[in-house]
Image 1 (cartoon, protein in one colour):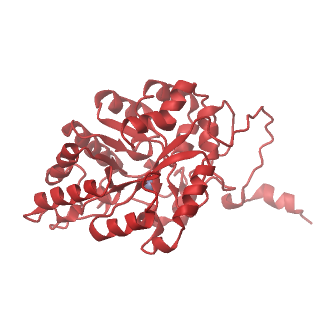
Image 2 (tube, rainbow, N blue to C red; image 1 turned 180 degrees about the vertical axis):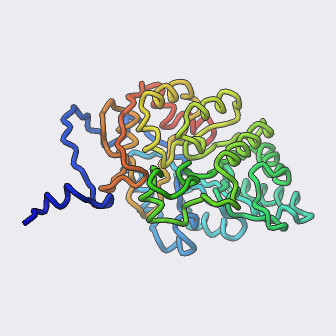
Image 3 (cartoon, rainbow, N blue to C red; image 1 turned 135 degrees about the horizontal axis):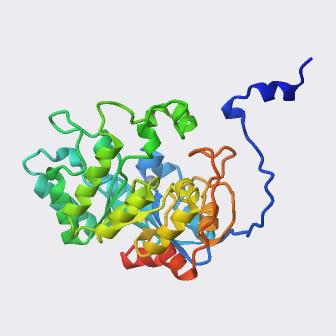
Length: 352
Ligand SMILES: [Zn+2]
């Protein structure tokens, strides 16, 4: 007769593998941030919560929840304009001081003859309503098409009016470009995020009709370089947190570029030596964010632990199996001066 342990020794499904670490190391407990935090990457609207978002959370309760977590202000990033923007702002009222909003414009109108005046009036209205910046999502580059059925490139010259008008009106432009590199690779045994792609096959962008990751990175760089008067925040670690050397070069070359660290803790935290040097070198250009969403659990704790401590080998997310790859992370023990910049001073300097 074979025992259960014999059977698992011979064969075990990856999904069933949930090892408990036996490592015994000192661990500093962090529950609250050392300084008040501005979370520059959150969602209070339809992008993550869907069209019925207004029924999915109570705004006053959410503000309390964020405050309890040590957050002093948030930036709400939504691809909305016109009436949908009004609806979102009504939902957030009267907490506009706590929840700063970024809105957007409809880029699929770019071939229309009056696109330029449409952009100017949309941005002017948004600014008058208190909007602080513009948000563009990965659908720009990966799914939105022009009138000729071509995917719209991020650096399409027809969009230039948006970046120039944003600069003129003092609106910051935040873009979520592409996605983790592994999402552009084949879904096979070599893919470091295979479990996630098996669960959400629609997150794969490994398709011959689509721009490759490398093409999207070139478009992103063209955009930043060719619009030097526009301030860009490139979300999710500058789109390429797997390669901080590359992001570092961009930040050196383009003073109008900032990054946030939202939803990339697993990337920064698995390369603690490189990440620490990166945070030291670019301490004035990194914004704190986690991609927190109204009504959902707030996963701040591991971010605080990563930034503030030298703790070793801990989970970057709250789930039992880490959702973005099977590895653990390490703290980078930032000095207070850098910590303050990342937590809120850089955001304040940008008026967020
Ligand atoms: Zn987001």
